[in-house]
Amino acid sequence: MKRTPLLIICLFLLRTAFPQVAIDHVEPPFWWADMKSNALQLMIHGKDIGKTKAFLEYNGVKVKNSTSTGADYLFVDLSVGNSAKPGTITISFKEKDSVLITYKYELKARAKESAKRIGFNSSDLMYLIMPDRFANGDPGNDNMPGMLEKADRTNPNGRHGGDIKGITNHLDYLQKLGVTTLWCTPLLENNMPAFTYHGYAITDLYKIDPRFGTNESYCAMVNEAHKKGLKVVMDMVFNHFGTNSYWMKDLPQKDWVNQWPEFTRSNYRASVISDPHRSQSDENKMSGGWFDTSMADFNQKNPFVAKYLIQNSIWWIEFAGLDGIRQDTYPYSDKDFMAEWMKTLREEYPNLNTVGEAWINYPPQVAYWMDNKTNPDGYRSYLSNVFDFPLMMAIQKAFTENEGWDTGLTRLYELLSQDFLYSDLSKLVIFADNHDIERMYPVLKSVENAKMALAFLATTRGMPMIYYGTEALSDRGTLEGDPGKRKDFPGGWQGDEVNMFTRENLSSDQKDMLDYITTLFNWRKGNKTVQEGKLTHYIPEEGIYVYFRTLDKASVMVIMNNNEKYVKTVATDRFQENLKGYKTGKDVLTGSQIKDLSKIEVAAKSVKIIELSK
Image (tube, rainbow, N blue to C red; front, side, top):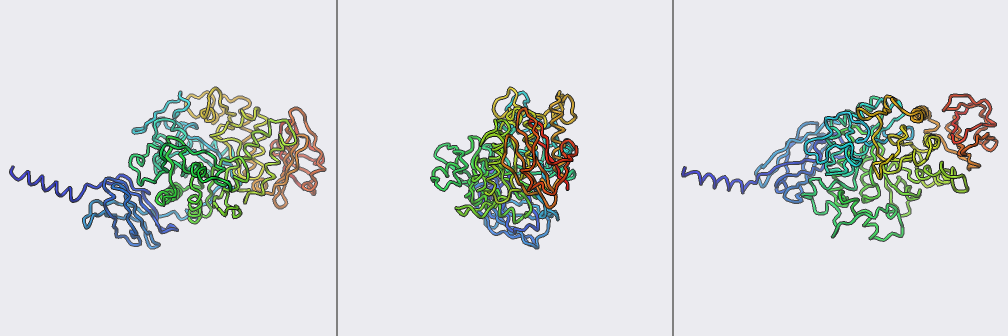
């Protein structure tokens, strides 16, 4: 008994000399051998891990540096050489000469086809899904341990239970619709107390939200999509993250986020970044201001933040076998960092595509963000694709206005006449609505106008994208704000009266639209002329807009009649520079033959798409 105090004293001294180090997070959680870049930076978080240095012995792998940024953070720079083989690396964390803790880090074998992966292109139709609102394939994961917000389908702003299994279960439906590329709004963990269904306040960049599924179920969905010929694009967010992330309780570095004396929002003026007359204060507020109180703003000027985000994107591409990336709020992030990210990504995956959300209203400002060498300020983004927001705005007006000098279909003509600004027209992603914008059907006011807009998307330059529910003629109903734009997909939940997947209880208009989209985009899927061909258009006259897509000896003629009541017999003399040599045609949407091209009849509020023949 007399020895007990001495034993306690010895244990206390031992613990004081060698603190109880713990490891809670290692990110990236694993890596691959044979990557093009040899550099790998691990962010390690845990009690007192920052008081240690990392050591390892593994053929081809070396510790280049250990950087402590606080008691509980250690950044370890590794060199993974060409001689490194897949296996398990034992990393020892030492204080002085004593090993306080070890960690087994896996180096995986890289898939042979990984670097050669082909991304999306103008031959594709992209389909945008908000997973929580599409289909509930597994009601068992609606509420999960540790997740703050619970499912409540009666709450328009709450979680409704859609998940990865719901998407996987309906890949056949998407394939039959004519879809070739799938874009889901973020699926990563969003453990915030409310408004988590949209996914844009991410709290763990390496983990699928358990209410959607698991990392493994996401990979399984991508694999199933690939088997059916569908590509998968991941929605990533580099500008901000959810304030309930463990980072906000213990920042890796004080400048991990953009700090202000008091909460400061972005001014949301994306145009300021390319403005040659901008003030520095406006630029700082645009890039450094927070998007929302629940979304902490990453400081990508911090090299550790930059490295973390770049590696995270590469990790998901490699892990899940992605075909592309959609990057949220593109101009809000530090533009020099974004250019460096794109350069790094393109070096690792030369054929992969990234489409940036540059939500700006004017073509010159959108063109600034597409990869080009002609920006007056010398900035080059290296970004392969951009969304064509100006064209979206023109589409939402063109089919509902009276025809005039600068209204109606002339809006489309005038917008396309500015295409000289873009470095590659095939890299524009074109659309009529998305999850942040009023749905096209209520905006366009009729089924006929919606059909015309879809025909235009299918036949003009660029890569078309449609939003889930377009085929169901979804509208906001009685819902206000964002919930009205993001209604549940009919048939995605057991007991739904209307079911798009089975065609049960569809209205005649819904059946008509579903058949129309299926015919239109399955035709487009097999027609290289509208995917890649040169666009030639003619100034609209009397509500008639005519344009052609030509590729080698093939040609497709499109005639739009925007008149409310009148069938138009269109004399084609004016279009002879494109019609010369062609004698007949086939109406793509009806399958009927057109034997006389000199005069073509087009019904009111309709589009005629003609495959020309000599």
